[in-house]
Length: 268
Ligand SMILES: Nc1ncnc2c1ncn2[C@@H]1O[C@H](COP(=O)(O)OP(=O)(O)OP(=O)(O)O)[C@@H](O)[C@H]1O
Image (tube, rainbow, N blue to C red; front, side, top):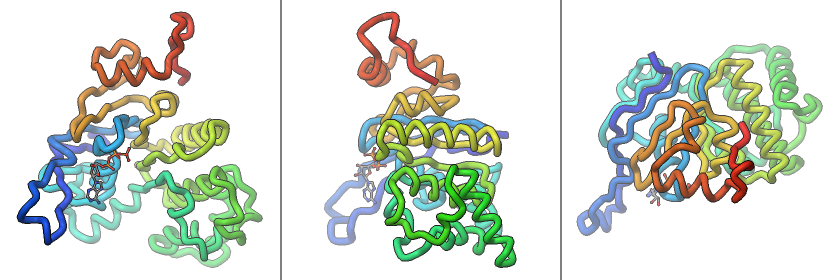
């Protein structure tokens, strides 16, 4: 059984009440299906406005689709009872692009990482402190940073803190929505290698949402391409990327490959 199965999702955002009668809703997602296996990363690529983030929100249980099903660990996310849904939510985490707005600026790092742990686990003050220290070390930060505030960190460091919070409950799937897109190239490479390392250590699965084909190729096992709310190309093995005949995929690949035939490769 796949860890995640998205089946025939169709969704449109509701228009405001004033315009509801006048406007026809345009579907943001139309009949989208995909699956993610245990320990695998699916790279979800597409142009701006293709519907990638909306699909991410549907998978996270944040945007109820008008049609279709999201089966997470075999359970229908939108028809599960409150207890089952809370259990599923623990296994389903997210890291967004904007690392600064993802955290409360008035909370210390310790309080930020403690939040999910306090919501789901009963830990003594000492256990909580130790766990937070271990999580900070796991993402390459000094545990002494735990008393600092978000503004005292660089974007890369803060994204590591967001990752520490996301892995705190040992989830099964993390939705990474443009999680490295706002970082400089060097920091991006460091965070991608951290994410790869965490994936193999914890057997994590990722939905890696991005418009950056190089980053997607580097971290993903399989790839899917979206256009105007539909999945237009799906590759179970990312090595099929260079041989795709789909026009949008070819143009995306062409835009990042060297003119020289010998250099026409992408780094894993
Ligand atoms: N909350 C919302 N209310 C109404 N329309 C929305 C909302 N969020 C997104 N949309 C619209 O849905 C469409 C898909 O947006 P979405 O953010 O899912 O695309 P995306 O592929 O993630 O784009 P990007 O790469 O630019 O983030 C866009 O036309 C967008 O304007």
